[in-house]
Image (cartoon, rainbow, N blue to C red):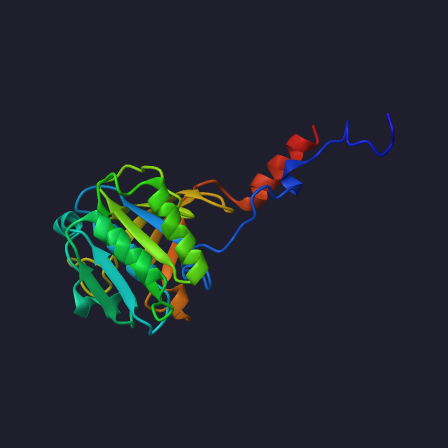
Length: 244
């Protein structure tokens, strides 16, 4: 066998990064990347999707366009303006209310081409025919071409096909302990499941809004809930297996 042949070589998987780790939403430069992200509600009338998106919006004073269809407003409710600073949102939110999902998609695509916006958020209920893979592909391409991040909140949808670069599923968790009143709710907590993404591994995190973050872009706090054990232990096991 020629000495330069690759046949017969032993490759230790622990030495190869098959998936490059990238910053999670909430870390500087990640949440405001100009891509399309899907956020699916884990159950009906679960406000986790709204809180998660609010905490992940870019730290900018430029306006955010928030458009919703009629069924989404019935299930998810409407944004309450005075509460937005409680999630670190300092930008004005321009609310657009329409009746049909078709109008939501049109408004999102048109708004994503406006450089004066910091983000576009759309809410669509169920899996209507107009919300096809082609429609999400158009949104994804528009976001990447214009540099405006797009969030698509999908309630009542179990995960139809989508061209989104990241797909999240959100569930509400019991709130954290209130430091001042044991009978009052504390900081909202959510289970954030990244079940599909391009160029990064999936994962499950305990998410919350962190008002004490040093940078506004880091106000979405994510704590891993994988339970896989220490990283050093994983590397040791992998090295042992590679060595036979």
